[in-house]
Length: 331
Image (cartoon, rainbow, N blue to C red; front, side, top):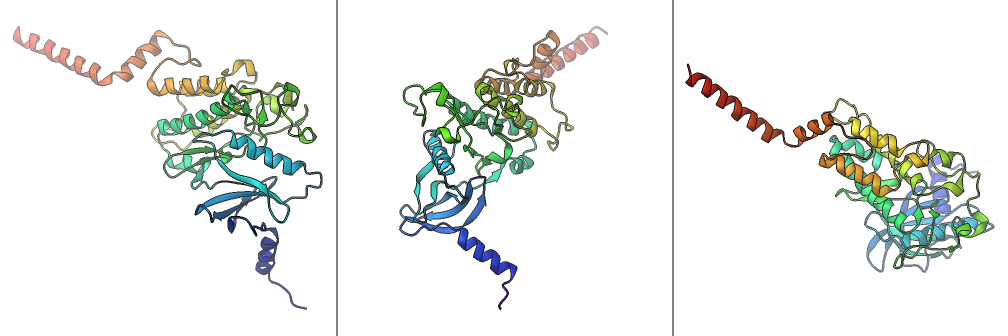
C-alpha cells in the first residue's frame, strides 16, 4: 500500500473540487477563496483575453435552493450597474452540473487592510463616501445589502471601491422606470427568490457586530434602508478607530455624533437614508453644520476660525503692528 503525503492529498482534493470548464470560454487558473455557498476561482476568459472571478456552487444542493440563490445574486448584481458594485459578465451551469457566475476580478485589498495605509481622517472619510454612494445606488434600485462589513468591501490600487457579496440581499420594492430589479413584484414576495429559501420572519441574517438590532432579533419584515445605515455607521466607527495619526487616536466629537446617530438602536433615531448619512460626512469635510451635531454659537465661531485661520491671523497681525506703530509714534 502506498501512502500519500498531506500535500498530495490536498492537491487531489483541490483537483476534485475544481470546476469542469470543458466547452466553456474560461480556463481555470487557481482557487481564490470560498464562501458559504461555494468557491471562487480565478479564470481566464479566453474569448476576451481577461481574467475573471468564477463563483461556483460546490456544496450539496439536492433541492436546488442554493443554485437558485446563487443565480439570484448574479441577477441582482447584473441590475446594479455602478462603478463601485462588481459587475457580472456571465452566469449558467457548467458541464459538471454546478451553477456559476463570472464577475470582474477585483485586484486590491479588503477594507480592513487598506485602512491601515490611511493615516489621515479625511482620507478614510472619502473612502467611506464611496461606499455610501454604492449602497445608496442599490437602495435607489430597491435592493438592501444586509451584510455590509469591512470584509465585504474591496479597495483597488487606484482608490476605487467595490462593495461585494450581495448573496443575502433583500428586494425592497419595484424600481423607478429605467432600473430593473430581479424577481418579485409583490411586497409579500420581496424576500424570496424562490419562496423555498426566502427569509422568514425570525431568521437572523447578517454579521454580529455589524447587523442592526432588528436584524439580530430576526425581524425581517421590518428591515429597510436604515438597516444598511446601521451597518455603515459601524463601518465608519471601524474606519475612525485607533491607528490614525495626528489625532491622538480620539474621534472628533462631530464624527462621533454621526456614528452615534447612524447606529441608534431605534431605526427611527437613525439617518433616514444613506444619502443623508453621506451628506453629514460631506458637511463635516466642508466645515459646515451637521444634522447629527447641533450647532451652537461657540461651535460656529470655532468652525469659522478653523476655516479662515490664515486670514484671521493676517488681520490680527496687521492690527497688532498698527497698534504698535501708533504707540511708538506718540512717544
